[in-house]
Structures are given as C-alpha cells and as structure tokens.
Amino acid sequence: MLSVLFISDLISKDNSYDAKEILHPGFTTKDIDEVIEFCNKNTIDILLVETGSINDISFAEFLVKFNNAIPSVKTVCIAEDITSIPKNFSNTGVFSLLSRDISYKELVSSLNFIKKGYNIFPSTQTSLIHSIDKLTNLTSRELEILNLLCQALSREEISKLLNITENTVKTHIQNILSKTEYKSISKLALDLLVRGNLREDSSDY
Image (cartoon, rainbow, N blue to C red; front, side, top):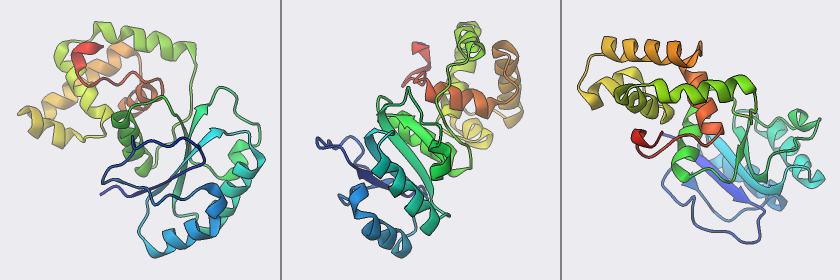
C-alpha cells in the first residue's frame, strides 16, 4: 500500500491530489518540524513536495533538513517549472522531480515506481523522443500491456487482468523493447511517465 504525505507551498491549492494514497494535512515547507514529527509518527513512503520554483533557497533548505532527519522517506518534488534544475539540486537529497502538468493517474504511477527505488527526472534526450515515436509500430495488445506497465503492474498482475499467461506477457514485453530499442521496460515506462505519454486508453497513443 502506497503512503504519501503531500505538502504544498502554492497559494492556490486544489484538491487534485486528494485520494486515499495521498495524505494532505495542510503543511507547507515552513512547517518542517511538524512534517518531521508527522513522518516519525506515521508510516510514510514518500514525501511529495509541491512548489512553484525549485530554485528557491528556502525550499532547498527544507529538503536538506528533512532528508537529514528522515532519510528513509523518499522525497519527491513536483513543480510548475522544471526546465532549469539548479546545479546543486542533487545535494538536497531529493529522490525524484516531477512536473505539475502530469495527471493524477500519471502521478500515482510515478510514485509507485519511485517506491520501488526508481528515480524519475526530466529527460530531453533525442534518443528518447526517437523511441517514443516508434510507439506507433506497436500492436494494440502491446500498447495495452505497455499502458499497464506504466501503471506499475507486474507481469503476474497483467497476465491475470488480461487472462493470458505470464510467458505471453513476457513475449509482448520483448517485442516492445525490440521495436522501441530500449533495453529495460521499466526505463521505457518511466520515460513515458516523465514526458506525459501515459494515456487512459492505449488506443490514444
């Protein structure tokens, strides 16, 4: 079960992240002591911190203090502008960085990957764009399976959901990797999430 504590520094807050997976007690980065106390008293997998700018000094100070206090909780930043990442941003201990533009479904999928230990950061590599363009070469079944993989489902879960064998799922994954020229299906799924290429229905690819 995914357990996420969400805090936001944005003045205008909405309820787009209100769900059973995400706790939203109303903290901001100014409430650092309360946030640490809350995480010490509750089982939290991920601290999701929303901010307008990752370049703010006080924001970086919050990340450093929290990660030094509770290194077991993965810190994920979600910001409106992630085009310019500060050179010393990695020194804050942040585990992943997401765009505020992603949908709730993409967010939860990303957080499930992060819980498993995968880092997610923006990518603008030409090879990535080239591979994503090749999604048009995938069959409808391959797209369906890729969409489920983007939701962090295992091969066993996919086989049960689609009523096919795990070996069939494995074969489809091998075909997906061959057509997209990726070596890792998890890396492909993460890159799709980062770029916002995950869709509600695989036919939308």
